[in-house]
Length: 256
Length: 251
Image (tube, rainbow over all chains, first blue to last red; front, side, top):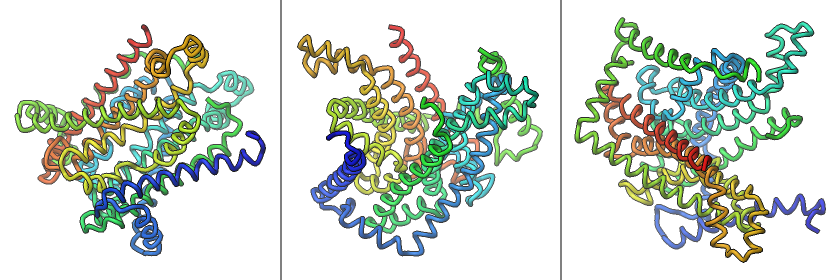
């Protein structure tokens, strides 16, 4: 009964379980084969992760990281949507800004951190600047692309019934662009997470990336692997977390 | 067609890029920003010229390029091979999809300390990190492209007795090539970024090391040079691959 309601629920869950267990089993097998300090297996790392989840040090690092990511994401969302709408709705703005964006695309954002640290110091502001810049770009691209392809009959109809351009933008273009904005936000926050970890590794002030290298320097290998595992879980949760509201907000959209 | 989807004239872009550069240069010349914080465009251009004639620095560039090429090569080989093989069977395809979903959100750079521990401090951990980071876009692009290959082509090949191996060579690979190249384009830009970062975090040579030593001695103009060179390499690699993809599509 390949399509019974029961199998529709349990089969994917079973597949997920199987894939996760196999990944952990492969990791354990490799660790067992090399038998070395530099590669502890999950049987050692997972209990250690549960242990460090009870320590203040870890939660402080995680809070510092996520706070930076949240602030950066807020700026990226505000700036990205505003600039994206301007690019999408005005050919002049598009002509002026798009080449600059295309040039900035291959710039290694985390690598400019040492330069930005000259301007704003080694603290939060520099790291937030770099994370926000990274997360803004995909939001701009997606918003510009989506707002450009809004069905013009909708805006014409609204304009003919006396809506001002601002009302059109707020009531028609923005809602119609939401699916694209949601997609851009998801890409943006995942790229932001990567740059967050990298920036913390470079600045070495606080946060998970910094703590990772502290463990590395002190030879606390099991703690280091526990932190890597935790970052994987955080990434997965963030991805899921952003998938949920985007489905809720844009369930009406046709999948493109 | 409407006003919003019309393509703006090209000269607008040229104007904006040139005016940003002029504004930057003017701000530096007029003393609006201290040169220690933001060196002028002309100073940076001069430093890039000096970089390309210094044998030590060119050697660092070559070291970085070697790591970039090795990592990207591994990512292409593994990404395309695993993507094609896994999508040939329903079970492995399902498993690969879940494994990608589980591993893709992990910031790969977090693996770097572990790679340093296991592979030492020389080329190997940098190459490995580049390969892991560039692997995912290539793997995902390949995997999804194979799923979209017209089944009628596969059926007719099978009905005429074509072997599985030959089907991969003669049908699947050519059909997926444009999508694979798109994946490689994304992977290549990521690889350029990651190789620089890996060298910044732990290295005694390469462009990333040049950047870190410039930042330690506050030579701000020299900090821009490795970043600009790496961005240009990424930009050109991306454009070159786009050109290849266009050629293939036209064939």
